[in-house]
Length: 105
View (cartoon, rainbow, N blue to C red):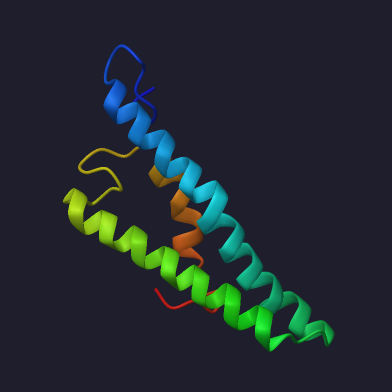
């Protein structure tokens, strides 16, 4: 699939895609999810935790800045340059819904 190059086609590109997907599933996804959970779901149930909100919002913003820098360095418009990959598919929903998590992009 063009979203994840095969070992034979472009091993370096495949490894980069896997690296960014691992970054998303270990960082961006969980932090954006927690930011949304603490600000949008738990707060309205009376479980407002400023420490958790601040921590997850700040970490989400830090991760989005890393992604923004990568997009700039790659020459974009995609994470690894001119072609869409699995890394873009993994990151896009969190970037597109940052407003819902009250995270500044």
